Image 1 (tube, rainbow, N blue to C red):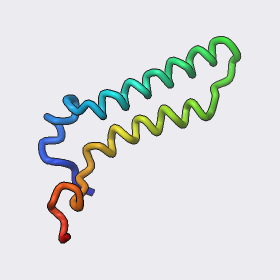
Image 2 (tube, rainbow, N blue to C red; image 1 turned 135 degrees about the vertical axis):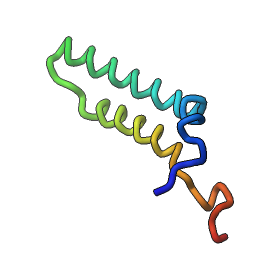
Image 3 (cartoon, helix red, strand yellow; image 1 turned 180 degrees about the vertical axis):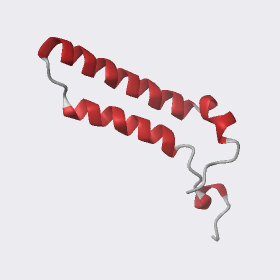
Image 4 (tube, rainbow, N blue to C red; image 1 turned 90 degrees about the horizontal axis):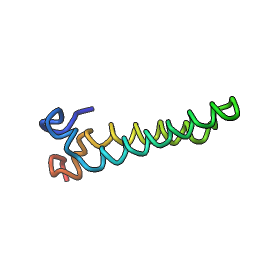
Length: 72
């Protein structure tokens, strides 16, 4: 697995990453409010938050067929 060029420099500037983190933050807020009011965490919301974090990481993984570095 290779990361995109200059990923440390580009990662905070990518809007898709920012929106993924915002979605994960919203999921975390919903989980915490639910934990406070009912004492249980909704598993679907936790999964959505983890999915958002995975989407942010997937954004910096190099995709050769998309970037033109592949064999095609």
